[in-house]
View: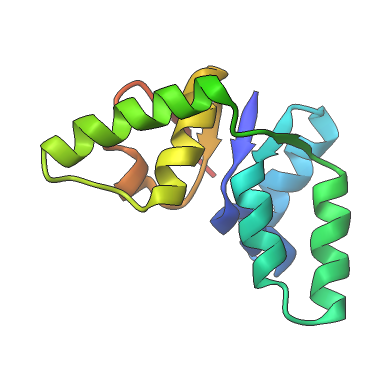
Amino acid sequence: MIVADSDVLIDALRGREPSKSRIALELEGGALTTTAINAFELLSGARTSSQREKVGRLLAALQILPFDEEAGRRASGVRAELEQRGKGLAMADYMIAGVCLARSALLLTRNRAHFERVPGLALGRL
């Protein structure tokens, strides 16, 4: 299972490579998902009706993974560990990492510098 982060999805929506081709390839393969957190980020960032339509079409093609109890447990553990080391992340990033860890999913992101701090999180390359 591959979870697409917001940055990669935004690049794909804007037609930027390599994200555009990678997202298209993974959509064809049927393994591409995203999280409810990423869906929120995309939907809240869409300012025009055209942007909202594009985001809506993309999200309709993806399975949206919820932030559930297990994801919450995993996210809170990551937060405690990283903040203890002084290497904290944004709250949304903890939540996205928690969803991925709870489902043993690979995260496809350009934000590798932040997510590489998360122990056990598999990161994909564009």
